Length: 205
Ligand code: URA
Figure 1 (cartoon, rainbow, N blue to C red):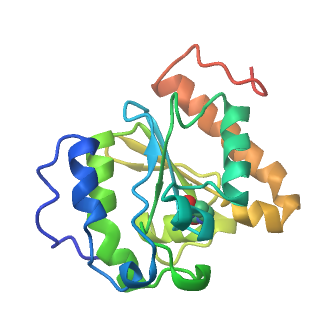
Figure 2 (cartoon, rainbow, N blue to C red):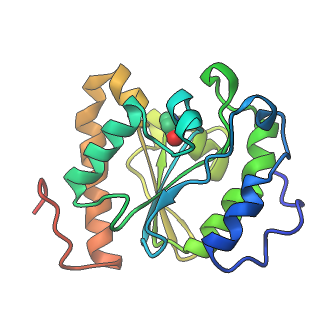
């Protein structure tokens, strides 16, 4: 992975980082995308959700997870007692839409990694939820299979990471929702342990 892109290491807050990321032209995805989808949420959130990359609706509105999969993600967050305005932050592995929603290539993911690294360094979340194969393969293990690694904690320094199914995969395979909810309950347990013992979750009191 390319950690050599200079210049993002010194930013100390997301408002300052945003214009630098929005000017990124480190890979070909920027040529076909309408714009850069930086991510959104509460910068003080202790939990971050990372998807794959913007789809058509995200590229149009320049906001993450605002299409069909995004609506399911919002429902998953709500079931956990989270929402993107109040106590969560939403990011993607690549910030520009891959044409036709194809999976971002290895060199595209590598090119975008300094953007994500800078965001995560500033956010310093206690918990990172990896939504789907692309996120887990980019940040944990290039050979990981989501069906095998979902639901298992990966600790990197002070950061606890949990791979689970991408909401788009849950829309295609509704039978996986039961396993996904098991994963989300484990994430709520960890959130209560690390962040807020009194955290209220409507479906997991
Ligand atoms: N899928 C993703 O991985 N990210 C988005 O922002 C939208 C759909």
